[in-house]
Length: 502
Image (cartoon, rainbow, N blue to C red; front, side, top):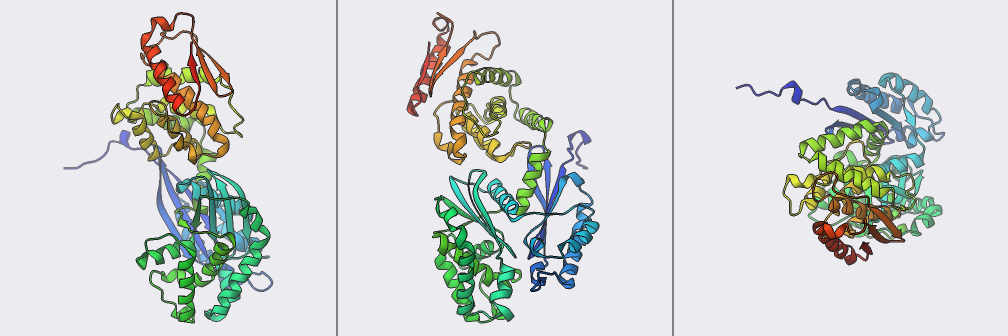
């Protein structure tokens, strides 16, 4: 029997590609975007070691450029199948340093048939942070470290916004050539490399010690190599200084890079592992880092999500919500009923400044999807809704918006969980608390699931104290809604919110 899908069931995905011309390796990631899903379908990495081709005058030699162009010829074949508007190609530290970078870029653009942007170190750091936070669960202030071939990016941020960042001219390729010439691994070489890294970072140290952070995340090669080695050696732990000191001593015992055989260290990482290790030790010691976890995202992922944010318009957001409403059989009439009432209350609410964050859009989406969890069952459908949206990305909405929608749906009924707001940037928490109160009230008052039931309702806000005003005697004739309001007053009182109705 032949089993095939009807053409009406097929949805052609959109493809996006990000290419990172790094100092050690060139990377390309391709994702498929369809019906609310972002899925990686290709990853290509080729070691080019471009930074090793820089001479003392910061000129790229011909051999390194040829290696790069050859790699890009392979990338070009894949990119020709993707809409040029969905492609982002950036070049990083070596191109910032090389005096003849224009020569490489000009020929590379001919090969790729696409423009290449040489990005400043600060922009690279921002995109790395974006890639890390889009692909990792973060709580409170987060420190992110990315050690590249010729630069190291350090960022501290909260939620999806970096607070401070720096891009330093030190990397695993440049430090390998400088401190471990001819591949010799000695204690003195490690000490010199660690000292130099600390001196380069020292002018920026105060910017990061001014903040405390709840977690440290490592991106890209060196942290990933360490994580693989720790795991391969049967150690169930995060990356810690004690592990790195042991690996440093192990390197010294091997004496030469050609003899470096450490359990869990992959062959393609071997040649630059000691120098990356030295840089990371320097940062751990300078910043008194206790432990580091691994992030699955970095620069490429940041570029992808930046494109998705910039290319999604209102129509794509509408399409995303429409698809979820249809897929999970949401009652459209009730969804619109709750949305319209919530927007009526939104106009009466003194919301704090949100730094350009579109609170109205978040409220509308949460109202339209607030019953998505009924697809599983009624009793805990607010929790089921949170779970569903945690595992289904909303195309057209950035990660912070998605988090806010999920938090609103989690809290639109029953017990209020303010702990869920810890993933938000501090400046957003107050606004989202107010949106929670608006959505809860709108859902409660639409309990009869009928139009033309409710009178005109006005809200009075006195700081955080909310009073809901009904026409005189109206509540006396609607005992169901009065009972729901009484229960809601108890729920809000448990979290310290003042809620009155009259």
